[in-house]
Amino acid sequence: MEKKSKIVLFSAFLIVIIFNIWGLSSSQKGVFRFGEGSILLNNLNAPWFMMDGMSLLMMAALLPIFYIDQLSGELNSGAYRLYALRPYRRFELWLGKLLALATTTVVGIGIVYIISMIGSKTFFLAAIQRHFTVLRTK
Image (tube, rainbow, N blue to C red; front, side):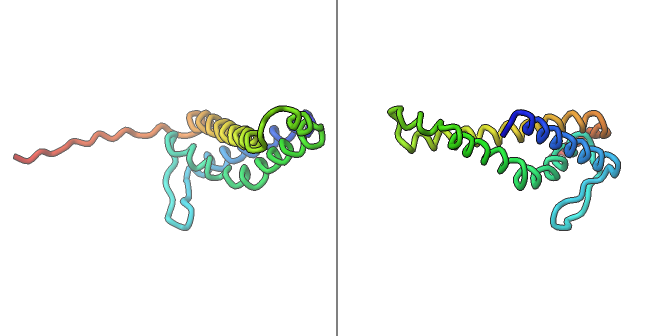
C-alpha cells in the first residue's frame, strides 16, 4: 500500500472517530449491548462506549487491510527471498510477523483510546464523586 493511501485510510478512520464522539456527545447517553439498558455518559465511562463503537470498524475493515498489506507487501517486494537467505527457521520468521501484527493491533487500539480520552475530557461532563461512609456496628 502506498504512503498516500495509508494517509487517506488513517484520515478516514480519524473522521469516523470524530463522528463517533460527536454522536455520543449529542445524546449524552450510552446504550449497552444486547438491550441491557442505557446510562448517562460522563468523562469516565464515555471512552469505553467510544471504543465499543469503533471495535467493529477496526476488526472488520481497518486491521485486515493493514494485515494483508504487511503480508503481501513482503511477498511482492521479494523480501521473503532475502529472509530465506538468512539462517532463520520458518517458525521464527512467522513468529516475528505475528508479533509485528500484534504490535500493529495494540498501537491502533491505543490511538483510538487516547483520542477517546481526549474527546471525553473535552465534550462530556465530569463524573460526580460519591463519598460513601462505612457504618460500623459494635
